[in-house]
Image (cartoon, rainbow, N blue to C red; front, side):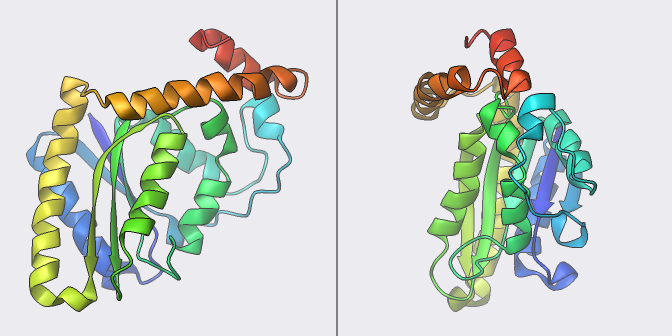
Length: 221
């Protein structure tokens, strides 16, 4: 089993969010899974140009490291998303990765994968950022097990508690994957999304052949 953690803070090793990620991966490793960190802040991932080529061919034509990152994410069993709160949102580096992933959404490529999210903030605004990351996971067909947020206003004890919770969430993520844990509410939302987006796929069947072929192979068309 392979769990990948995405970190997106430009502060590198000085990132407070990284402390939560490291604790979560310690929990993953303790539960017997393999781990890997991908630091998107150190990669050259360009902006999406809305060219729609990925819907036609299944490959983004932009020459950078995005396709390599996507390949790793698709081969993983679980994904830990992380970002500090920058202006009540995820960092620009992580948002760029999200924006480059319309095919992942259209084809629900995280179907069968599990994940959770981690964030830190100077103020108390952590839930919105967690919802952005978990929402992306859900929008792409995956399931999320929760999230951990810590504000610097909580002081050292708050960070200590968040580190402990991150560790436990790492262990729990591995168990969720092993037992193929059900999340009926999320699964209902996936089904409702597919029922609605099915009409979009049909309407664009000539322009988006790769999307269409994927939907047919999954039995959604």
